[in-house]
Length: 401
Image (cartoon, rainbow, N blue to C red; front, side, top):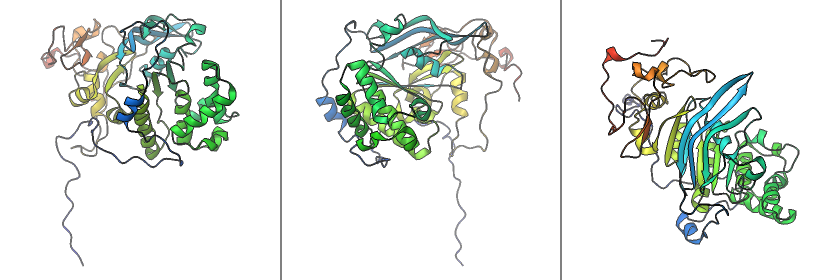
């Protein structure tokens, strides 16, 4: 009989936080199908990549993408749903921005607004979406086609539903090349084969129908389609949803390498904070159609300021945590047909004061480039919250203890 010492603790105190991306070499995940994939180094690619041609109406010196006070509303049974209500952010060339928040906070609606692919009962009612200084929000359905797929494209959530089940994958990738770039069908299909190999799928598999591919390969095909017209910005709307953990890692690794090789800017919509920590440079936290906090991933995840961001991170599972249960955010998100006045998180916020229930908090930007909309940080704040006596807090309305 061999006697072994008892196992030690599986966690260490003081480690309860979501760790930002670590800059260290990683072993590339095994590709799902054989193929050359992306093998060129980022530095060599940057040196060999020619300058991207700007749209004809581009404003010299303008940022790649600047969204200011975007408002997108839905009409539902005679009522208005304020799904996106004053969202602002900026995306620079080569940057990756993650947008996170609870389901229904407006992440996907924001993404669809950027490419103007909203449902029939939704419309942009305010704000601007400036791509190279060109306001896309005011463009007609015909005019926006000049920019959609060519300058900004999207990888939709759920490739099985997004792909046409009765068309071959190669033909679906070739379609935007023909329609947007005016390339003939044969050349477009040849380009589609190259794109499939770029994302790690042998071009011979392009003759397959979507149901003949695995979930990971379908998602790769969607990424190839998004790259078809060489856009400057790719939006990934929950690109790893419904995929197993290993395939998720492969898709994220692929997006990162494509971004480095092709000089893409990436907007990643997800509810998985670990995906943002691993992939993105900056993170934008949304709540009930508005921005709660935005800034560099390292700053926001290590030192979250907004109470909602703090609660969101505390609810994230961590095997090194000094506890057996997860924190929960009491209450429910507000009804966006009749949102509460003031801060929309106030009914659920443990630090809510009387002013939070009456006045919309201003957005304050600190020296570390973190932007927060919270009354705990008044105008001129240096990043430290004002002290709030327990007696001054309103407390979550109807929250469970």
